[in-house]
Length: 113
Ligand SMILES: [Zn+2]
Image (cartoon, rainbow, N blue to C red; front, side):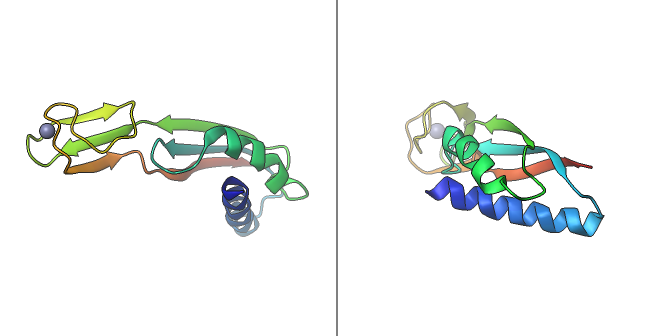
């Protein structure tokens, strides 16, 4: 499962930071999850306890902020967030658009003890 390996990698990285900071436990992890990140939120939340089990992150609360996809059109300059994960300008239908946001998979903060 893709999300399990992501969760495991995240826990390993956070453990390193924890060790460096001299903490013993991770109690809360906040992260931003883009609509186009390729990470399924439900699967990630399901995989996290398994990845965190037996590590200092066991039992930590996950706070996930979902980031909608935002596109910027190369033809008309229209910039908007969109519910649909489709790479097309919602204003003019042009297909050359840049992703402004929505690819995030970023830990923004964590609380440690
Ligand atoms: Zn456009």
